Structures are given as C-alpha cells and as structure tokens.
Length: 424
Image (tube, rainbow, N blue to C red; front, side, top):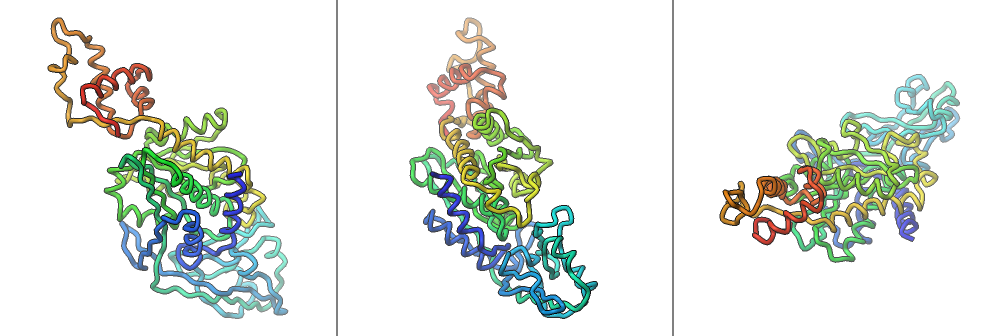
C-alpha cells in the first residue's frame, strides 16, 4: 500500500523540469507541501555567499530544439528534459555538423540512453541525445535553438521541523534539483515526504528536521546558516537518495565510520536484508554526505540508498525511469528509513550531569579500604559516564566500553539513581 502511494507521488514529480533553481524546484516543493503542510519554502537570493561558494543565478528555459538540414526536428526539450544541457546559454544559430558536434553529448557505451549533462558554473550550451541518433546525423546545416535566461533570482529549498519530546534532533536530507530521473531524483524526495507524513502522525521522543534542497549548493548554504545548531542538536542523520529500485540495500558510512548513524544503519540494513546489503566507505561518497560529513562539519550522518549512485547502469540517463523504480523498491526504501528512525526512538541515550568526572567517593562508588565496590566496577562506571554524551545509545556504549548490554544497563540505572546522568 505505502509503495503504491509513494510511486504515484513520484510519478507526479517525475516530469517536472528541475535544476538548481527555478520554477521546477518551486513546483516540486509545493507538491511536497501538499503532503506535509508544515513544510516551509525558503528563498535565497542569487549571489549569496556560503563558505567558499556563491548561490548561482536563477535559470529559466522555455524552449529548446535542434533541426536537421531538412528542417526536421532532431531533439526537443519538451519530449524529454535531459535533451538540453542544464543551465545552457540562450542560442539561435545555424552551423555545420562539424561545428555542432562539440555541443552534442551522447553515450557510446549505452547507445539508446540520453545522458544527463550540466554546466552550472561555466557558460555553455548543448544538446543531449542517444548515441544511435547522433550516429545518424548527416552533413549539412543545423539550426540550434535554446530559449533560456539567467538572472538575479533565488534558490529555493524546503524545511520541515517535527518537534518531539526531546530537543535532540535527527537530520534527514534529500535533493530536488535533477530533471526527469526516477531513482536518482524523485525517489528521494518522494520517500522522505512520506516519512515526514508518518512522523507527523505520531508522538515522537526525538525531534526531526527534514531538508529538501538542491544538491551540493543547497546543503552548503543550509550548513552555512545552521551549523552551530546542527552540531549542538543532531544525534544522527540520514541523507536519502537513489532509494526506489528493488535490487539491493546500501549505505555510505560517515567520514569517521563510527557514529550513532553508522551503527543504526548497519544494524537495520542487516536485519531487513538478512545481512545481504552493501556498505560503502566514505571514500565512495558522491551525494550530500560530502558536505554533511566534511571536516569542520562532521555531522553523525550516513547516506541510505537501495542501489547506490554510479552502481546502476541507468544512472544519470533517460533509462532511470519507472522500469527501474518500482512500487516494491520504494516500499523497501521507506521501510529502511522508517526502521532506522524507529530504532533511534527505542534506544535510550543519556547525558552526564556534570562536566569532568563527578565526585564518586561520597556516593560510595569509588573504591576505598573496605568499600563496597571493586575497582573493576568503578572502571565500568567511569567508562560508561564518559560516553553519556547524548549521542551514544546503550548498544553503542557497550561496544565502545567492551561491556555487555546488561552490564551497561546496570551501570546506567545506578547512575540515574544517583542523578549523575539524565535521559537525552
């Protein structure tokens, strides 16, 4: 049932022409807002500085086509969004085939696929087509028309905060900047929007922050404005992408590979796949985990996928469609993310009540001659305390301290009774 609902939503988003900026992004956010009305749609002016980047000019395109020497249409943007290089300059020109070739893009290894090509930060124009089409082009004069413009406008993104009983947050992110691709684009926002709907229908212990933003520049801008808050509040994060096929389950580790999000994702993916899932190193990154886990940011975040980007041959081509993305695939992606959040909701995390080690002697927790506790137990107490930072759950503390869950639970109950820790 949930798979069909998400599939219908994804099919609605699929034909919308999206890029880093523009009406397509706004239209996409408005549709997501229908599902989660609390979503706020933000606008960032072109030229805004964010760390080492600058928000680009807004790009608008109304028409694009290529005519052969007989005036017959070779490709038309209206037939498929991928036929035009993203952020193409306006052009209306006649030129010979030899001169046109440098503005054409195709994939010889996948002759029936239209490639996805962009040029966001360098002025270019171009058309994309199947290699089969390209090989059939004959000598002569061609007319290339792209009616587009770049102007000082805005970049848009959506943000949804779902408050829970705790101020500790789980950060969830996906991107909304790719045209007409099913797995690499609309599967992420479609699954995450339904996760938002599900979270909004229940009482949550944790708070949840959901971000729908253009890839790379959107994430960088958001971090530039909210980094201090995120570093203070976020206990785990998940970047959602390529989550609609039914071939596999995958995760990309955080940069350090040892965060709560890493532990949760690995545990949940192992359970839902009977241990048959793909775990990728941060060295194999490619989505917005590049920003969220970068030095100086280091959010405890992993990326969740079905089949990871670059690992399916339809990636960044017109073959990334609803032959690849299925009802079952989207349902599995939804359950994977939901499972990670349910795991986090069930796990208890504690925060130490005092900076530095507390005074254990007057609580009869520090060994003295004739004391009731052994040095080994005191070592357990101090070690567990050291990892009560609001981020680690009991399973993670047990792993770090080389203890059993029962041992950690025993120590935690004692620390709670002495008011040396409190629940996050």
